Length: 266
Ligand code: IPD
Ligand code: CA
Ligand code: CA
Image (cartoon, rainbow, N blue to C red; front, side, top):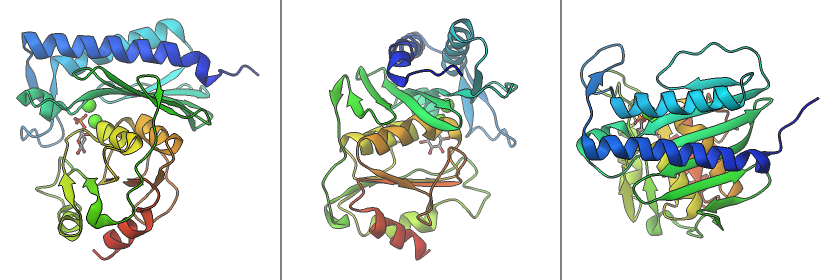
């Protein structure tokens, strides 16, 4: 049966993420419209012209190059055909940041074969940074090998998290968890882009990250980055995750047990 070698597909994914990043940047410079989305249309959960244009571009390229593959993406409901290959795409992660001109957003593209992540790229179009990984092939930042940090105590660590869009209405909103951790760490960050947070764990700028209720497109590429960079990914209970997990904890491995233990106190 046909297989795709992850390192062979990597140049395609890199180009896709870079070009999508350029599309996003053209809207960042020239302006864009913002629309509400989500069940409550309360103006918190939004989509911009940049999200849509980036997604349309990525989907068209994948369909042209790999017509039989399935695609799971944030802004378009797609039908799955049962293909063994699945692309998981966040065309713009960090949309709230983007819409305020806050410089922290990215494109995230993960690629799975038989339900296993085999390649992933996160592209930061502002800093021109591409975080990439292939299964069993290591993780890279702009082509140079990257590894997780060596921090082994929470009091010497920077930890990041995030809060779900339904935080005002749902009791599962990460506020109690945040309060538990914030007093124990050297620095706490809420970057506003889960895919970048995971990339930063992978390259050692962050020592750990957790979040609840993320979606597959927020996590797919970043999960592989962290694993290939020597980090650990589980759910908040320390159990193995999939791209559909309802909580994610990503660390440099050394801090994993401590962070899981702290979250378990909530
Ligand atoms: C969001 C960002 C944010 C996280 C949210 C995500 P979006 O993705 O990753 O950091 O806290 O849960 O939904 O909406 O900007 O693609
Ligand atoms: Ca996202
Ligand atoms: Ca998004």
